[in-house]
Image (cartoon, rainbow, N blue to C red; front, top):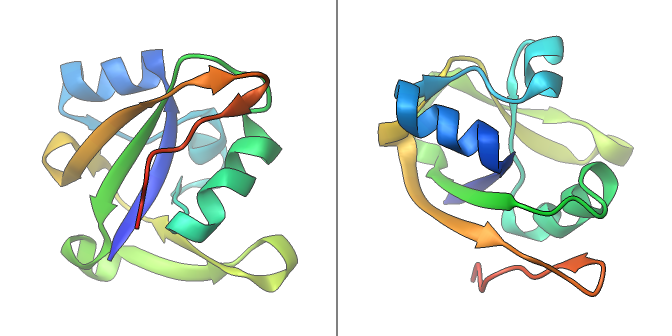
Length: 111
């Protein structure tokens, strides 16, 4: 199963340059890296990245993260994947631009 992380361009660039990341400022503050499943990703973009251009949609294989990935309740009790270790560049299955078109992020097919 793929899970998704939305990064701003500088955060994505830093992961590629450094080989690992502890995530965005919200991840550092919370002590884990926030992910979404495909069905949650668009709402995550609306809630946390409204009108933000220059985003990347990073896909990661949830099973490959092993015991460091926990499914925990968040918005309205819905379970979200949270990673309790650095995200490695080798964890990334794909990275795609998430363009802002007419005020909304245009998501690729995640099916």
